Image 1 (cartoon, rainbow, N blue to C red):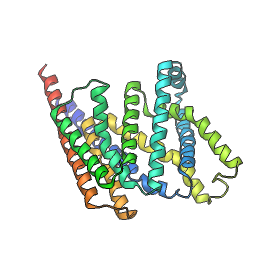
Image 2: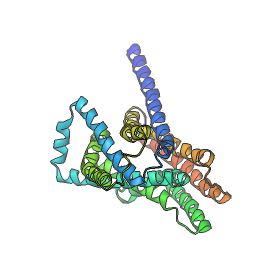
Image 3: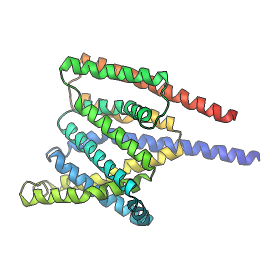
Image 4: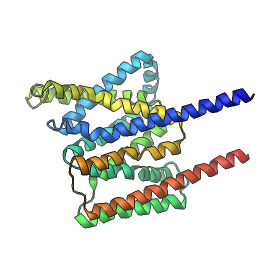
Length: 311
């Protein structure tokens, strides 16, 4: 019995470590994405988006062929409700991808970082109002602090940080759709890209026919990067999905700040974007908000765990 318990404990420890590795890999890859999109900055953002959609579909379709999972796609599409939710997810992730690509190549990397720092707090708001989940004092304080940070930046510069807000809201809504669907990550991505690939192909074809497309004029190395965008999109999602299955959600909650932190430092030190005292104060409020939020989430999970053990 003791041997079995020890073996089980060792397996759990191994799985947790593996899950953390997958999580770190996924969020590090997402954090480094600005470098990738900067390499494609000679191509308009909308055209990059169209290629990202097409090549993502090609890549996940190949994965599904190896898994022999096409039956699942038919079953899901047979449901009108699920089809509409997937279409909504496709629209939301397209908005998110386009905004992100445009922002990186228009030198708004710091705003993309802010957007993904704010995202967990927007998710909390949706959880409270849509899913009717309980909202404790810590989460309320975190939201107020983050809102203060955004307001400081808005008042100082006279402009709302739209890039950050669009990224945060679109990705939070996309996450909500995925939570309602409760389907495998790759299956959902395959269906989402399947729905919008015809539009993306039409757009690419029209650009090429009118002579405005980039395919005929870009170097082979840039074309390879464009094609590889499907792999770049889907691979971190696979790592993320694997990580979430192996570790607690609170651990993933900590790890998710890796991506915006990497983007934050890239924006300042690699892309030389402006970072004033106002930015520092604004980000400071958001960082404190995330600490408060993470503590609130962790405490909530511990209390839930104790309550279950007591039953």
